[in-house]
Image (cartoon, rainbow, N blue to C red; front, side, top):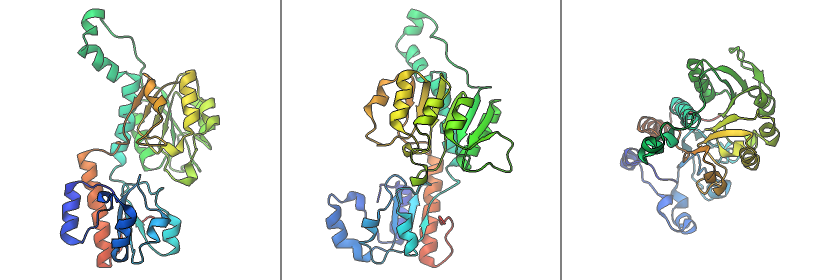
Length: 306
């Protein structure tokens, strides 16, 4: 359903008959021609698979997602019909956590501005650039302490940071302070990082109450999903200065994001690319292909989403 790298598409083409929906200018015509023969869907987290589409596929037996997030896949529809859904967890965890810290360091230490300061000659003309903000030793709050949240916490430990988190329940194996909601966590930290999973259960998780509870001068980072935040409240917090800086990899209407974000020099923007390394994308593709192969071989799926 979406473009895949050649290193995935070519081995798939060797084993299966592929129908590339993304190449068709007319989805309805494509489905009218190919729907009766489709036995599996390969999709991406941001594309998903709707019930309306899957209803057209009478032989559908698998939905394999190239990515972790399955919030755009109608999992309930699949579950009701016994159609398994797979994703690619774990293999992208560390790279997403790296990106969270890249955004955090980039915005706090003004890395893009520093690069421009050298390139456009201001270093020569004006001397040293204005001072920036440290990251080490700060209080960091993590919204969602799953795989990625824990990886962010491990990096934060290396920076000597005080770690706290919010989630549905406290983690029995951790001693970090737990808060039941982002609004409860927000006033206790200097840096707030969203690592929550996407989907309807976390839509608007970091709500207006949370953004209004943030300590003035806080840094906000989001590497989860744009749906996890009330974007209007986030923009208001940026306009008021309550959020001093932000590093954002995800947005509500990506890739056509709210243009207001581009007007803030204190916001570092990325195109939903936290897992975008060659190594991780190859591992994601391999795991996705292994699930497809297991399905057609009648073997247990490696990473079925239960």
